[in-house]
Length: 260
Image (tube, rainbow, N blue to C red; front, top):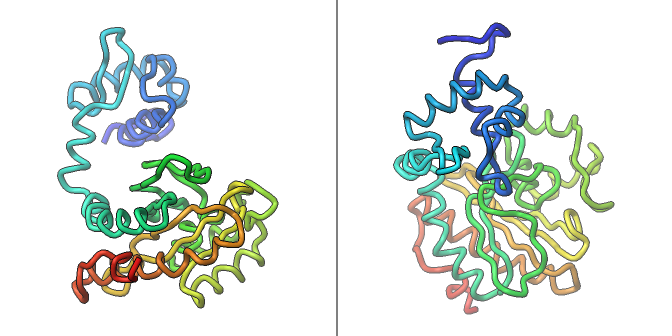
């Protein structure tokens, strides 16, 4: 595999180019891609041309660069996240219709929580997550669930920091976070009042396949005295989805099973 003079592979440089794009930067000039990817302009131009030839990138009528349709095709064709998301939507939809607040699904990706689905409604409490968005594991309820059940090596690496902080309530101290992770495992869900936004409480439960935690299903509800009451329907939804994924239970939608 060809490498740059600094030893970086072509694939690594291509990934840096793809990482230049984001929710607020879906269309970029070549110079913007070069700057964001921290690559020389000539190298960027050559790689963009090659990636566009394979459909991974595209150029619009103004020669701006954007993600190619083939990236979507590849993800839809064989992504395990796609199957998980499709299985979860029934349960998330029913839960969302009952609680009336943002419902989301996150998976572990590196040292972050990656959100693969999100259902919301007009008037819902503020929610900073978005589909394909990421949050630090220590900051969100989904992240705490994923971190609590992560391999020991990953958990210890995250605990050693640095730990992100959004509000005074974010768990950004190692010993406090370590104790809360133990509580999440004992209690069965994460409860995060004001950890990311002072007006919102995040709640999340583990989603298991054959006993292994593969995702976290969560709610974002108002940060008030009613927040704790949402944990029960969420736990029922997570348990129902886990049973469906493992083939050990009915596929009845969870909120109906709970009687609304």
